[in-house]
Length: 601
Image 1 (cartoon, rainbow, N blue to C red):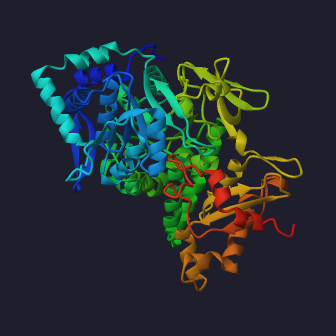
Image 2 (image 1 turned 90 degrees about the vertical axis):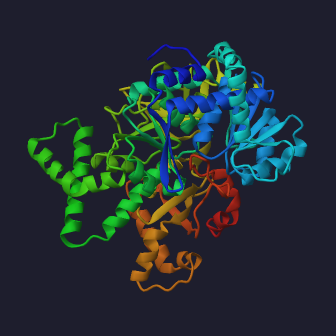
Image 3 (image 1 turned 135 degrees about the vertical axis):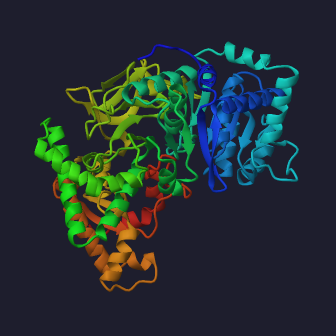
């Protein structure tokens, strides 16, 4: 692993000098993609940084960033850090009260927001934020709703004026004064178990993690990355932003989460970071398409799927593939696999999966058809990546070996511990919580797992999510949920059963599959609420559950379930920015339905 200890602005400046005319960023606006070169990227960072300094921003002060993924996000991030200041990213989906809490707790002096909707959240809270002095708005409304509001372009113009009149010496001094161990960001956790805590990460945390990631996942300036995960999350922040700066890889921004499939066809990326929900939806689309096939086309598709599964089985057993098998696989690729690859852009070298556990069955399906998914694992507190499967040595069912410079140990109770340069400085303003999280230099991850004989880490479940039934059986719900989500009729699952006699589940069907099936069966319904209440639908899902769980232990079977007529969403506070379901929130929101499943038992 490279031992270079440096700062993000210093790294960024070196890339600008080395790759000036090459494309660094690409974004879509008004139906067309627009490139930004490294030189232009560097100029925008310089001007914004000087503009922020002209507003009185001092080193080690906090600047909040409430903005969707767009070029201004990464420009603002590097500009804030170049000033020697600290970036406090805020998720776009948070409520005004949640935004107020983060701004107050972090003592942010300036906030950069993207549009009038986000601006309104800040202005509602401004009276309770005496430290907040300036609100910089990218899409600034006219007339200005508050004297503290200033447009993003005005700040950039002020900085450009400074650069012409006084030069950039003050900014050069700020960048050169930065140390690797200086604070770079305070990232607030999702707060599923109380008020969110600010995770303090340094320049060296981010840089060392990005450098180490590139050992396992070699990419360079010939690649093209597509970003859609929220940059406010540590996963995308490091892996879609800082890794790409270190490797000088251009980034294309997806328009929205909903347009990713379309943007992949337009951009044709070669590498991409995503979360399990992305792969689940992609798999569901493939299966939906396959379900429409008939005759010889369906026969060929099923043959190709069996061949892919056989390939993975041979790879796991480390058996060489015979020439005859290779020939058949080439035919399957030409007839089936390459069509799937084309829907992913046609140039993808590999995907990375993080932010939550990926179903082994799903990973092996994609691996079988030649789509590499390198599953990794980490936490915000670890900058974030702890482990990742190397692109040339993927072991399905694991999150890979540790990154270079990272150590992992398994505590007596099975909890995963880690240490290295990736560990946070602590929780902002929470010394006791920091002491509880990092003991003798080891971060207590809260996850349960084990290391195999090759040093690959396998995650069993979250320590706090383990279900202990009334009969004393320990159940890891994520393993069961991941198995169920590979069924084409099931979209989301949350299992319950702690201190209960049996397991129950809240299930969101895949309505894109369920609705056509119901019509084919001649079932009558006017809404999804009516659809999930039909006895025929309940019987179908029960049958699918039994098939998917036939290899699980008796105490791991789902005895009762309730079908929901809507998905769990981020906007309703039920899903995190990395699309993990918030069990506590769902459990409280659907308490009556859960209790109903245990009545008369």
